[in-house]
Image 1 (cartoon, one colour):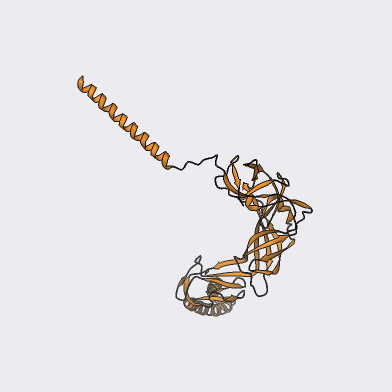
Image 2 (tube, rainbow, N blue to C red):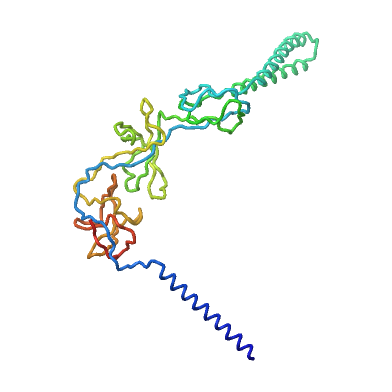
Length: 351
C-alpha cells in the first residue's frame, strides 16, 4: 500500500515538473516572438486625386518571336562526312547543309544498274524468241517482272542517295549547330537549327475589356525597345480564345522585319494605340493597386485610417490606371508603405 502511494506521488511530481517546464517554454517563446501592435500607426505615402487628361497612348508590351524555326534531322542514318554551314550562316531554301556518307549506296546503285542493263537485253532477246515460238511466254513475263523490280530498287536507292544531302527547308539563319563531322546521324536526332526572322510574330496580353480594340487582319504600329526610332507594322493574325492566369488574352501580330534584320527573336517591344478617352478622368499610379485583376482595390485614407476601396478600371497605359468608378476628385489614396497594412489600420502620412 505504501509503495502504491509513493508511486502515485512520484508520478504526480513528474507531471507537475513537465507542466511547469511547458509553461516556462511557452512564456519564453512568446517573449521571443515579435508582437505587432495593430494600434500603432503605419507610415505610408499618399497622393490626393485630381482630374487629369488622358492624352497618353495606350501601350501593350510583348516579345518578338521567329515566324518559322525548326531543328533539322536526317531522314536516314549514316556517318556525317561534312557540315557545310556554321552558327550565324545565312542559308537559302534548298541549300545543302550536311552531307552524309553515301559510298555504299552508290555501289549498290551501280550493281542494280548492271542488273537492269542485263535484264533489258534479256527482254529484247526473249521477245524475239517468244514471237518465233522458240521459248515459252512465261519466261518472257518473268524477265519483264524482274526488270520492273530492279527499276524500283534503283529508284529507292536513288531517293536514299538524295536524302544523304540534307538541305534547308526554308531560308533563314543557322542559330544552333548540334553536330560535327564524323558524328552519326539518325532520324529524330537534331543536327542544326534554322530560324527565319525575315518575318516575326509579336504577342501581347490584353485585358478582356480592351480586347475589342484589336481586329483580325488590321494593321497596328509596333516599336522594338532596342530601336524605338523604327516603326514596324504588325497585322493581327490571332486573338486568343482562352484567358491566361492573369485573366488576359493573347493577341498575336505578324511583323515584317527590317531589310537588315535588326529586330531579333526574343527582343521586347510594344504596340501603341491612341487613347479614345476624352475629357478629364481619375488617373492613379499602377503601384497603388492591390487586390486582384478581377477585383482591383486601393487603400483610401479617411480620418487617419486606411480603408480598402473597390474600384473599376477603364484602361491601362504606361504605369498608370484610368479609373472609371470607385474614386472621386479629392480622395487620398496610399501609393507606398503596404507592409503590415490592413483594412482599418491607423496610418501616418509621410512625405
